[in-house]
Length: 209
Image (cartoon, rainbow, N blue to C red; front, top):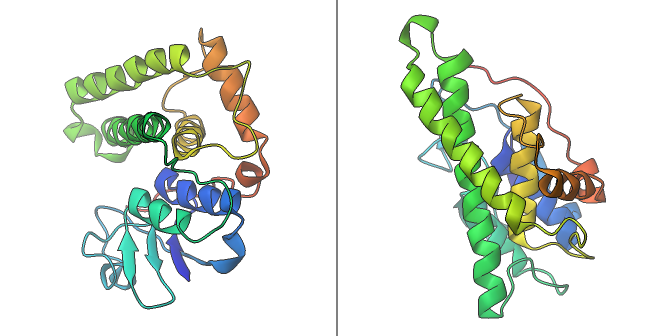
């Protein structure tokens, strides 16, 4: 399988971390693709009409995009503990955390547009403040959700992976100091960052608009 990837994308990193946790990362040919809302990467557009990564080109030719879809597909390809639990309560807990993590990443990207990526004369302060408030609110919620004393065991669920990779991007881009005054979230994140799957997939590079 081929994975169109970007070394500074929280969504792409989530897929690769998940593949490592599943033990199937060796089955992926990871191909870095530089994408941006302002640039047309024709190779990516050929497989995803939205022009975004990650994109998974399966062995049978099926083309999948969106990190959530790709992770669910990959989760059906291994015999180990599933990242998306079958038991309903655990399943929707994991999916809710994944959705929250994706919302944080989306808001963080919007904050970056209004603080450094958009031309200074066109930046809109109310948008920056509004999106930052979403991040702050979500992190406050997570402080009471995560269990710092009992971090994920042998296999974290998909929500754990989505959250860890999102927070790593927030930290990487210096969007917001989520660890300040949140000891439980900070401890949980630090322990997740020590997992081999996270250590093997560091973020790097700059966005090219």
